[in-house]
Length: 268
Figure 1 (cartoon, rainbow, N blue to C red):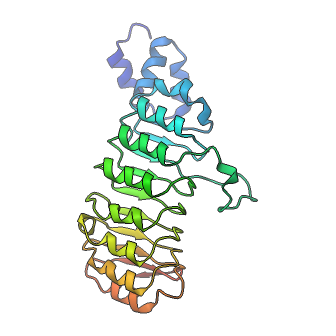
Figure 2 (cartoon, helix red, strand yellow):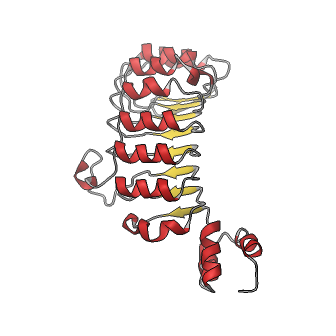
């Protein structure tokens, strides 16, 4: 194995996708360990506190995934060591059946706006960011992401309860997003929805999830008719102020394909 050049070994490693096989190859010698790290494209982390120990081995990562608590410091390390990341999945998952989505006491060490700022400034290739149920995510962090990530096309902010109309005002001014998930962002109102339609976003957004956003009304939903490329809209459990009137109007759009309204999927 030592006689193989780096290019040849890298070519071999690029064809090995099974994690167990890659681990076995990396244990053959120092060269294979180094090349395995250089050719690793994705990693799923269960113990973020170990990031400083192993992340420098993977400078060419394209996808980073963890559902665990992760601090601002760890995100700073990620941004510094892995600037080529394209997909960042930080969706938080409850640890046990007693977990309360609104109980932030279980995620006191989780990242906040500062951590997202590190990511926004250091990972300019990101096109997909998922932040579901991250309690520290608010307007400032979202603004950092959409302002400094020109390739961002997918943004999941579901159940990020600090996200409000302020973030939507900036999101509406970007011209790259195709997917936006605001499920459970209860601070979002009609004013925020109107902000989404006043800028370049109106020409790119294809799917919008507003499920459980119970402050919005027919007025805000009707304003979404200005989103020229919108194909899918989720209005499930948005409360009594969103009625069939708005749903039918949106569904009449020529480009529209799917409406999820009051937990019922309607194909158009």
